[in-house]
Image 1 (cartoon, rainbow, N blue to C red):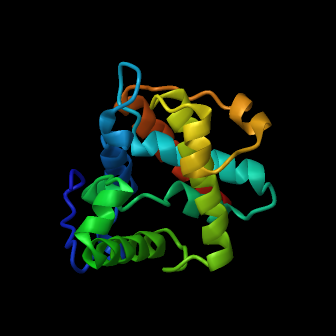
Image 2: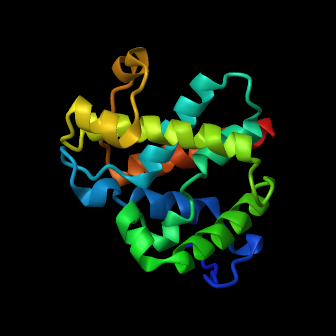
Length: 187
């Protein structure tokens, strides 16, 4: 990693995880395989910030640790990339196992349980689907009907209140790192 840490992908440990590495990697990993409108790729870091924002809006009384879990929901992608669901399925259970091991190490590094409670995981997944819907319609060329079909319908107020911005990776990386620091301070 750029931090100098050596991360064993098959046996990751919390001491090998640094937020700067996560933020940097996610800021350069493109969602939608880079097939988005704009001059910059829409990064997993930007998506993660949006998911945390949506989660917090939908669950204003959620403790900071679950907001942190929402921010870090795709953190393993800083080293394994963002694969679309059909590719993940084709790769098979090995991908899921790798993702789970990395997630556990990341969570433990930042004071979260290795596995998030199912109810919280569902809430984060809902925020993730809302984010995907917004991304699909605003920057990936989907119609509203297509997004509804693939990600489920969302509250029209939410659809109209969040405008996505495509920004340079260095800017997104800084915002991701800062948001992480803010949430850690609240734990």
